[in-house]
Every structure is written in C-alpha cells, then in structure tokens.
Length: 269
Image 1 (cartoon, one colour):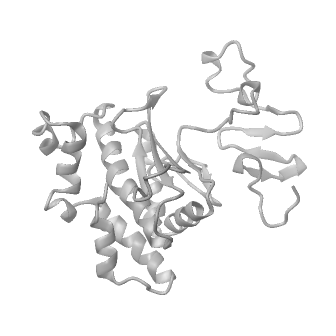
Image 2 (tube, one colour):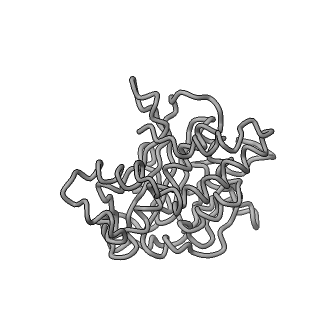
C-alpha cells in the first residue's frame, strides 16, 4: 500500500523507515514484514517453549494478531467510533486520563507517551473496541467488560470499553458521552478498586461494602447511577464535562452546558 500521508498500515502499526529498514513499531518490538519475524526475543518466551521466541503471532497469521498487550490499546473498525475516540483522545482531559493506562514509549494516534501511567504500573490495561450489539440493543451506546468478571491475563486486569456501532443517535456528542461514561465512571472505579489489593471487591469504597447482600449489578447502580450525591465528587463530572465541552466548542457549540450535563448524567442502562 503506497501512501504519503499514512504510516499506520499493517495491524494499524506505524511503519518506521529509519535507516531504510521499514520495520513496524509494535511498542515492545519491531516487526520485519519481509521475513515475518521479530529481531528481539519475546519477553514471555519461557511461557511458550514450543514456539520460537522470534516468531510472529505464533505462526498463525490468518487468525492471530501479535500485540503489545500490557498497556492502552485501540481497535476500532467503524468510522463513527474512530471519530468519537479521536475527538475524545484529542481533548486535554481525555489525553490526561488515558495516559494513566499507557506504557512509556507507546504511540496512540501519533502521540507518544513519555512515561508509564499509574494504572499501568498497578497492573491495569485498557482497550477500546467496537462491534454490532445486535437486534434490540440500539439504546445501548457502549459497555465496559472485564470488571465485574475480573478478567485477568498474566496477573493484569483487562478492562475493555466496547462501542455499539449500530446505536441510535448520530451526533458525535452522543457517542462521545458513551465513551466518557464508560471510561470516567466504570473503568475508573474498576481501576481504582483493583489497584489497592489486586482484586475487584470494591475495597476502596466503604459505602459499597455496606451493600454486600444485594446483587452486584444493583449495588453498582445504587452507588453510581442512582446515588444523589455521587456526581459531586465523580471523575465523570470533572473530566467528562471537560471532554464534552471542548469537543462541543470545536464543533460550533451545538449543545448548551445544561444539555451536556444532562447527557453525562442521563444513565439509560
């Protein structure tokens, strides 16, 4: 693929042309597409003794992607999802918050993170993806997975914000609100909880522990979705408003501040 404007090609990894090597930058290692191999040993090589430590994607390139998975990851396929995430990432508040999950030297949308984020150091990884949620789920803009079921790989918590590609509402602010809601409310709570004792048990929240006899889902809604005073101290209030207001300003202030406030705190699911 020949292009003068885009260096993010195979698996959306940056093609580095330094010294005319033309290797793909995967963050942890550089991939040489000419020979289909890495030039550095896999740091997890002792876990896979039956596979060459230089092989790419365990030699299963048709259905496996080799990623630098202990950091912040973006895997969006829908154009509207990409626009919404790019808008989110392009704000000061969005970038500042996501930097907490990134690894030093990692590149997202052309930005290189200069240091490990605090949640990255605590063993929390964050991924953004999208998919069709299916018939009858057009009202669900996005969900967060990996928290309630405490999904872990190699001792690291894997949180994922999944955007619904077929959700109703075409305004970028609607999708952006969904990303902000999942990131600044659900992801933030899971990350903080896991950081203190490597377990999702809401040990960081004494009010949550008082409701242990009711279901996990109902407990969560009582504390965050329905709690009358939660908005006063929520990251969703500070960071969420900042993100939506900045994007709204860039798009001609189509929404009033009161409309933005209602979008942030109108929990439909």
